Image (tube, rainbow, N blue to C red; front, side, top):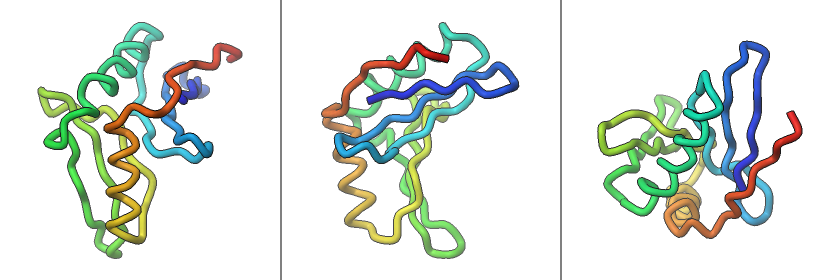
Length: 107
């Protein structure tokens, strides 16, 4: 599921949630609803390609990933993971597009 969020600076963001409801990907900020919708389309397109995932180990050894577009623009960032297996399972979920792409429109 993609959940849309409008913050007080009038920027739009979305969270992609797994079937059980936890956030697996947070978007960058978009200044228009159109760009926001293009971001979701970009997730659908780029998430299927393993080379679009940047796997990162933070200085404190926590793990996370970024999803990037073909022009290397950041689309979204994952939550923090403590195990490579869990991180890779979340990437597989994003890749499979098994999440619901419905949007809330109650802002």
